[in-house]
Length: 397
Image (cartoon, rainbow, N blue to C red; front, side, top):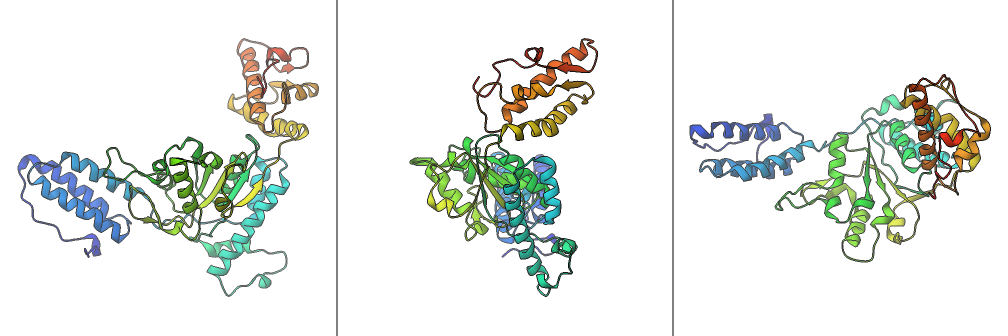
């Protein structure tokens, strides 16, 4: 076993020509980068053997292509945040406030999520401060007030599966969970994955090899315990070939008994995914295997009613659209009788994406009038609505 104490190891004595001195310097920089990293010893030794081989090849001037391969590999393994955990904030009052600020209604869903966070909080607190039992907390106090004791700790999270039609808030709720927990957030679209190598990585012997999307997500987040959203998981379910391979990989990734030693084909070394908070989304449960459903906690998202959409439009979507164009509610006035026409111009839409598009279109049209010198406020009513939102603009158009 190589000795990495004091960031040093035994180096071969290689004589080189003057023309190769710059290249040898680059190899030394690569070597130092690896030695000073937090890469696990076993993986570091394997990578170091590649660098030693590279030095030997440099002696004969046959190294350029090999250097690119080794340099890329060392870059990736040193970008993985080995052992780095963000400090969890499991204060359910904070989580409730953040979800209420960004999502109207959805009380049942919010309460279920708060239940999970509370369970994680107790689990983590008992592990870090085992002598303190819940019955010992003063009246009116909660575990949340003692979160300062949990600095640097991370709770094991359940795997949640959000099921509902498009636009009902699945992704935005997942982002709110990450924000409330003080965790980084990454999204992986499974609908775009046609090959398991996109998820598991490509062996480094292959041309243009690279890690899979999970390793890339960890590198982007710079922590081993982010919230990772696996979006549209039902689209990875299939009956043949590569789709089955994707589903088999997902079963391993979402299994708490297996994901502590996930092997990406490019990294070729066990990576601990057990601290990741995985949240999956699906438009429906059709096609999902019983084995996968056995690994997740299902939370169903219902469609928004027209009344809920009106509140969301007035309190969330409209202010955001105005802010994006540096406008205020004093610049554009929408009369009450117009809202039902904006909310449901054509047919029924379970979510709010079309509503967001309708309001964005309206605001842009009003902004043009303001730029052209029309006096403010711009009044939008039944008589002039067609100037701002096309009559056939809706989910079925």
